[in-house]
Image 1 (cartoon, rainbow, N blue to C red):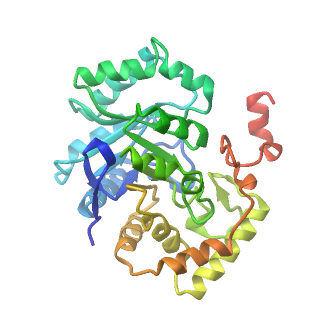
Image 2 (image 1 turned 180 degrees about the horizontal axis):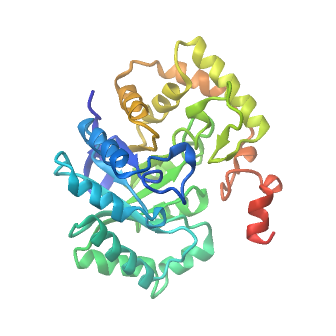
Length: 338
C-alpha cells in the first residue's frame, strides 16, 4: 500500500496524490480537538508512517504555529523522502503585504531548515479588498516574484475556501496552484460545477483539495455522534439529515462513509492532490488504502445524490463562511462585532 504519484500542474513537481495536512499536528490552540495529534512522539510517529506510505507532500501554514515543531520532527526521522514537498502559506486574516510575506517565508525556511520552499501560497483571501492588496505595489505577489528570483520560493498559489478569489486567481494566470477546502466533496461539488477545475486545467494550474471529509462530518458520519461538525462548526440540521441519507446509501453499497468520501475526491481527474488531516495512524492507513479500492464511480455518485442539500446551508454560493450568514454562531458573531 503506497500512495500513488502525480504531477502538480505546471509546477512540474512530482508528488503523492495524497498529502498530509499539518493543521492538527502539535497545534493544540489553533486546531480542533477532533484532529489533534499532540506530543513529539505522536507527531514524529505520524510523519514516519506517512512517509512509509509514500506520502511526499506536507501541507503547513504560518497560522498553525507548529512549523518549528514539524521541522524538529523531520530532522529526527531517517525516512524523510528526498523529494518531500513542503507547502506552506501566510495570510488568514493577518494581511497580505510584501513585508509580511517575506518575513513568513524566512521563518518557514528557518523552521524547516531548507533552502527553498517548493510551494508557497497566500492563505484565505476572501474578496476584492484582499486581492487588491495582493496585486498592488508593495503587496504579496510582487514580493513573491522577488523571492522566486532569489531562489527562496519555487511555485506560488492561492489557498482559500471562498470561490470568487479562486476563480479570480485562475483568470489572472499569476498562480501555479489553487488549494481549496471542502469545495469538492460528497456534499459540495462547486469547484467542478462552477467551472473552476476545468478553467484551472486549461491553464495547467495545479489543484489541491483539502478537507475531503468537510471537517469532519463525512469522516465521522452522524450515527451516535452528539455534535456532527461541518468545517469544525456545528453542522446545520439539514446537513446532518443529508449525511444520514448518505450514510445509509454507503452502507447499502457495502462502503463506510469515510471510504466513500475519500474515494469520491480521489476519483476526480481534475484534482491533482487530496490533502487529509488525520487523528491517528489507523485513519491515515485507511485513507491511503482507498486509492487502491475498486469502487464504481456510479456508486459514489449515487451516495452523493442521496445527500444533496441546498448549498446555502454550506455557505454557498460564495462560501465566505461554511454556514448561512443568518445562522452564524453567536460567539463568532460577537467576535466579529456583528
